[in-house]
Length: 113
Length: 113
Image 1 (cartoon, each protein chain N blue to C red):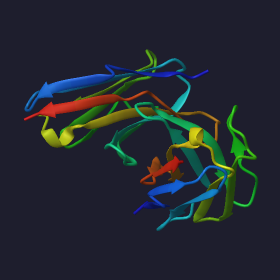
Image 2 (cartoon, one colour):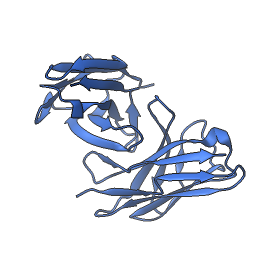
Image 3 (spheres, each protein chain N blue to C red):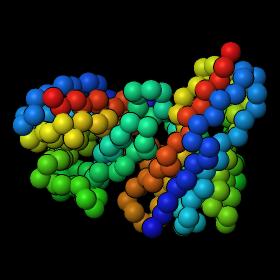
């Protein structure tokens, strides 16, 4: 059974810091891995999607890496800003499961001005 | 592109009544939509996979008679919480795929009093 774990559960940093969020999964038979942002009481915004054949994806100040063999992904946020404060969720799509996503518990990020 | 609209965003209902939540893909056709439930400070848990023109596939432990899902067209799926109880209070989110990644609705906060 696929399990997705995110560490840390919560993180507070001063503005301007670079930071790394971690995501691990137990079964490497994944189709892709996706990082989402969720603001309080809101839906999910897709940040980056990495196909299983890819190693990383970048968008602006965000960089996500994928090491399928070790079951790990990281989300790197450069020069953090207070507007980055949100919960970040990673999710894996499993092969032959009709598009089902398995989510981690999320990392609640707070960037202090 | 790839916008998913979810309605209502908030609903308060009395115990014993039924509530319908709509999920629409506005600019694409979605043969499959997904319904998730999220408890406070927890991650998203898949409830069911909704397939256009056929019965939904429910995850283990989800009562299909309580959470009725209808996917009558390629752009609309509905979730009806029947005979709602306070323990059904939660955040419900739908998602749909355009073939690459997933787009999520903005969620529905259901409060049963």
